[in-house]
Length: 244
Length: 309
Image (cartoon, rainbow over all chains, first blue to last red; front, top):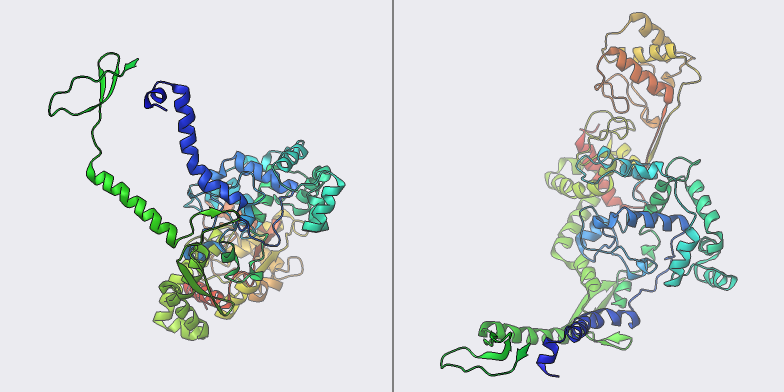
């Protein structure tokens, strides 16, 4: 092909440019989808419950990811501060994942269970009341806005379509019982999503008010589960290196 | 449109690409600077060396592992793997210079008694350095970076008020098991006048000059059947560490913001409303999250913050 025909034909130039720049992506990303060891074999990781999933949607809506990453990197200083480094397996049901390298605030990959619900609620309403040096803005409306869960089933169906194993029929439910156990499988059943969400919010009482399911309930439920699914005491130090 | 007519070229003139746009727009065909070109070749050579030493090319379900290896201990056995960041971290945690130095100090402090640690300058300087990070990540969320707490919510660890006891043994117990602080509200058993009287008595014990009649009546409620405050706080209001009941006579205020009140009236109303509501505060236990040595280091640190007991 003559140089001149590329230079004088904008459409051809665009197509060839796309072809060249996609090489980088194809070489670096595509192999990860078929290399066997990308996702570690590890017990305990499950999709989010309906309430946690709504919390995650709010996390994305409020733009938490612009300041907080969810990826503890394999360095000693990060292990000492945050805990075990993140595994690919731990974000296998995240769409989109919340990794990242920009930390204006601390990493949140292992924040679950670290602070009490009451602390999380007060901190989200007014961070400076607990951490005076914090520059995080407050999110007081989470506590006063009722959680919209009318479309929770549609949200789960959409995630199911991209591969999250929420079950929609008996066959898929049985597969989930086998894979995650009965109790978790019930939580992953799309047909029972709304009832499950209400039950978890009332039982967990994340925002301290049982009579009212607020966005705060969902947000705190999500934060409290982050990084808690894998029991790292089960695995030796070298186990996860086998997958790299 | 461009044309391909080669323009006439004078000797010494830079060659052009030969394209002519809009009848006279041309493009020089300058060679790349040598340093740039050699730099480019160097990156190519670097890439090839990198492919040989490090994991690089995907092949089916696996990839080329590279010749570089890392050796570390896994469950007491020596393991050698191809180069990867996880093995690198395992090795760094085991034999890295800073990790080894830190472990030496942790082991040393772990083997010492509290009296020895508190008296040993080296040990305390390690405690202060290590605990600063530990305290920052585990404790500062409530007790604040410097340990000064939040009045009305989280205890100040820098003053001389030790609700659950300020000896190293008591601080360690607090850290290991957590604490569940509870004072009932008196909204049912005391009316608002009586609440004000109790408040007056409590404030009078801290040298606030209040109506003597109210103070006397408050003392009767405090030490009598009606209030029964003495059962936890003690007859002389010195507090009881086993119940987390604070000393009420040392003019140190953790949960009621007395110093922030404008006048006696507001002070009485703040204390009275606190007695009316009661309070429940929980400190979580850290036995599952921190090692014994880490708890020891934190205990020594917290003890040194407020002067301990």
